[in-house]
Image (cartoon, rainbow, N blue to C red; front, side, top):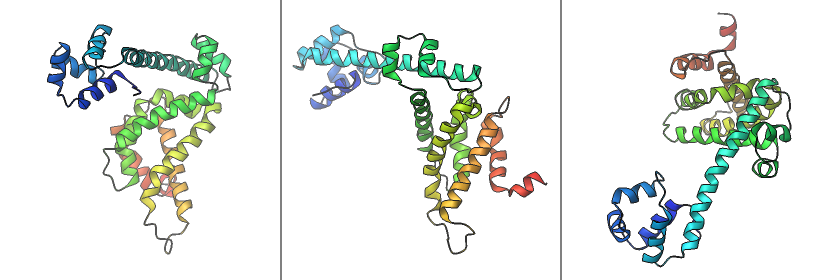
Length: 258
C-alpha cells in the first residue's frame, strides 16, 4: 500500500486493526497524546518508533521510512517554492511589474537552477501557484458562508482573506506584467463564485443577458477590490465592509455625481 504521510500511515494501521489511540499507544510504548500529536502532524515519530510500529504490525519499514522522507522533502520544497515566490514578488516590486524571466527569479532566490526549474519553469507557473494558495484560503473561508447575496458573501468571507494577503496582491494588481494574468485568473474564479447567484435571473424583465450581468458584476467587484487593495494603506475589511456593499449596490451615476 502506498502511504503519503506519516499521519496517513498511523491512521491506516490503527483503523485497520480497530484500535483506539490509547490501545495503539500501549502497543508501541508511547502515550496517547504522543500518538495524537503524530496523527495531527504536530510532531513526527522518530525512526526508532517507526521500527517498533513496523515490527508490531508486520509492516515494511522501508516503505514507512520512505513516507517520512517524502513528507520531509515536501516541506523542504514548500520552503523553496516560497523563496522563489518571494523573489518573483520582489523583482516585480522593484521593477514596477516589468517582465522578469525565470532565470533572474532563480538567481534572486539563491537556489540551484537545476533544482529550482523543477519547482517552477516560468513566472506564470509562480503566478498560478500564488493564485492557488490564495484561492484555497478563500474556498476554506467560503465553506462557512450561508449568504444569499453574492456581495455580502464577498464582504464577509472574501475581503478578510484578500486583506491578509494585501502585500502580495498590491504588487500583482499594480504590476504591468502580472496584472493581466492575475486579473484573468481572478475573473475566472469570481465568475465561478457568482454564477450560482444568477440561477433565477429573469431574462424576461432583465435589461441584459444573464452572461452580461455576471460579467458586469464580476468586473465591477474586481475594480472595487483592486482599488481598495492598492491604496497606500488599505482600510481593514471590517471597516471597508459597508463601503464595499454601498459601492456594489449604488448606481455609478450616484457615486460620481452625489
